[in-house]
Image 1: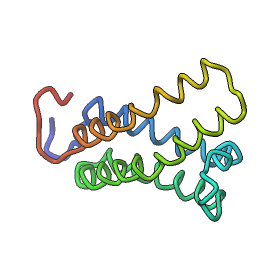
Image 2: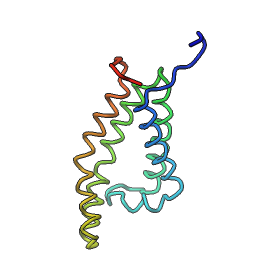
Image 3: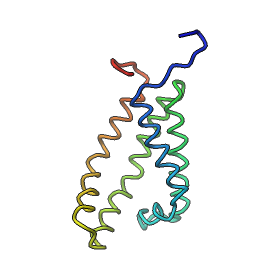
Image 4: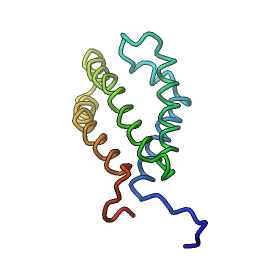
Length: 134
């Protein structure tokens, strides 16, 4: 590698960036869908939708750069914590709407995945190097 070349981010960082970047763009392409999953105690669902979408996009870009990777990773962990109430609200809303068993199962299974996602983002974006990061 030449002295001025930029190293490619590790594969899992690329996956995280793509996952959150795509989700963030989705907030702008289909805001009404995201508005409806906001818990009722959120005062302005549309503002929360757009703010969380922008945060996802910016943090996804941030994890791609070594200089901002760790901070952006912590930002994504915080974002995952912040949106967890919306995930719980989705379960309650689906139950009230008599959603299909398959849809409900998916929503219930998503809840315990959130801590795993937090750990994975933290691990992939931490500033301490680890083995097999490619």
